[in-house]
Image (cartoon, rainbow, N blue to C red; front, side, top):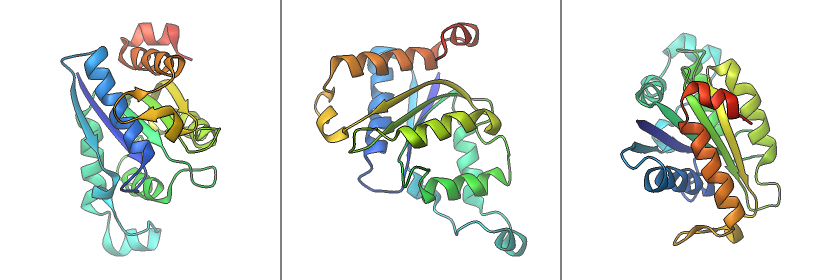
Length: 189
């Protein structure tokens, strides 16, 4: 089983990348020990801002195909969305816009676990809701979502999630992600 994770942010200190990395590590240490995991860095896919004029004059950058290839490698995908003004980060949206010019069903039928965290009390709830509602149109199968409010108080590099109830909720989301298709349909949120 191959699982790809990434934070949908280009911040080098992204708390969403830290949450996605933690979820991948937790998946392997507590759920699927033989899982092959990989963490994608959105900074590796920086492209000019998408425009139809740029596409017509220069074509689609090779990095867009490389992003799609990384998604194609995975059997499951974990994405943690940073929220900028209630929506996706510009960095994620730009990668998404370019890649969708090659493949409109960007997520390629993959089961998804969508996460979000923020320093505030809502935990990126707005972007998580938007991303999970749109994923089906973009070829994704959302198996579960998980929002973590107040990241700095709720997460420790040494211990992971500090609240047992939040850890239990993340573990349940990871179980939904890894469930066979029929079982996931019976238990999806």
